[in-house]
Image 1 (cartoon, each protein chain N blue to C red):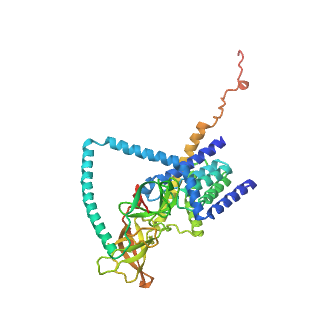
Image 2 (cartoon, rainbow over the protein chains, first blue to last red):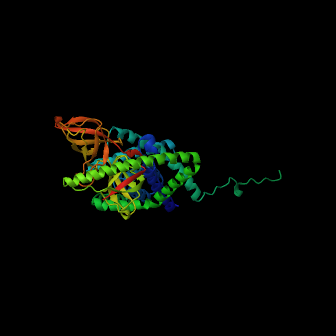
Image 3 (cartoon, each protein chain N blue to C red):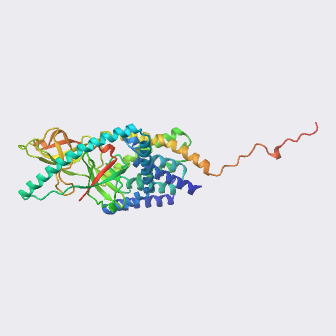
Length: 183
Length: 273
């Protein structure tokens, strides 16, 4: 199941990057495109191993950069670091709680663009940054935050469909049956 | 806690990123096109869905609506034919005058229609992908325009797709000329850059490096200059909105509203040499 789960996460990243590039819905409605990869990385960090995190960071980051004017690879490291941070502290996180998922989605979606911009500025590129960038950043952070619990619910449903179902033990046990006598 | 395996993967990712970022721009462009080639089936599906939707909406249109639309297009076509005749006459006159003063003859533009298939998913660049590539004769630096005006230029050309940098992207600069209002005023030249006051505005750019005492005013038309050889001269860029002095009045910067609407590009024309 772990291999299949990793493939499903990569497939979701692939479709999400395509959606971001081909859909103008959020651009026209909110004036900014929402990046769904940090939210997906939060889910991956909470539920999967380091290999899947690395695969999602490399695959998702390269797919995103290949459709963008970003230098190739610039999105990979911030995504990986987000996944690693979540993975490292996941035993301490209340993973099943939607509010916690929302919070970590918000933090990841807010930090990812900042980290990418930081790298871009440090390698000599001059991205378009103005006052409207602040609004775009808020839209990206909130959009990613909302998507994180949705992502968790969707994947847990897929998990339920594809994974082996646990055997439910009935309460009846023959060794604990009360044998009644005649009286 | 992180163990040795985690550190090894972290180092591998960091090395991969450094290697990719250090690639020469031409190689990086090719690698990007190769990776984005994985999306081709999805782009194909999206194109088919788009075509199906258009077909369905055409089927749903009533005969009366179609007849009206046809009539409007017929009238528009007639008007265009008359304009074309007039333009041909002007073109002939222009060619005759050019030959009299020994100027080289201007070649007619050759264009190919392309569909915009993707937009830049990052909010800090302005670029789109089109469905024409080197197989269709597209090469980097070819000008891209709509019927309204200049849009940008080809940045990378793959076999079946190309990336177009749009006007206002920090990596795109265009030599432009402000057309003179009358015969008594000189045409002013400058460089089109991304807007410094509102970089995220899709339809605004800056025209920089105008002289301090330029007679440029709001409403004047800005077209490509032709210097540099990338963009042929005379392609409409937009109109001057306002001006502000720079460098203590030694230079002037103008804000230009683009003629083409970059926010809703569906189809563009690529200019071939």
